[in-house]
Length: 90
Image (cartoon, rainbow, N blue to C red; front, top):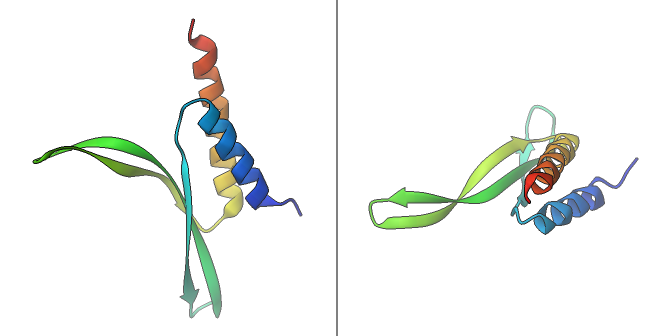
């Protein structure tokens, strides 16, 4: 089985090298139905939001899932797209 944590960190660093900030977070809860702990993964990016008091930075959630493979595939898609954006710049 591949080391998904390592793959996620490598993809996150690669995306960061293009100038896009991606945050990966996790939280756990107990599932009474499954009688085990479930880890939820969140991928987000900081964005500017206008409020009554001016502008503030707020994290925009891209995906929230219990599947680490879904997180890796989402990061892969972001990485591929960010590489395309960098190719288009003169």
